[in-house]
Image (cartoon, rainbow, N blue to C red):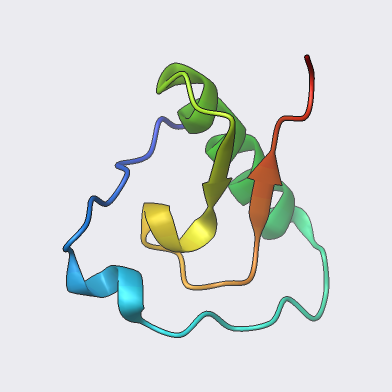
Length: 65
C-alpha cells in the first residue's frame, strides 16, 4: 500500500475529467486500498481519486461516528 500525494487547490489537475469505472479489478482494489491509507493518514473523512491525481470516478467516505 502507498500513501499518495493529495493535490491541493488551485492545482489544475483537479479540474481534469474523471473516467467511469467499468470493471472493478485488482488495480481498482489496490487504488481503493491506497486511497484509504492516504485518507486516514491525512486524518480525513473522504477522498476522491482525482485528489490523488487518478482521474477515475472513485470516492471514499468514512461515515463512522
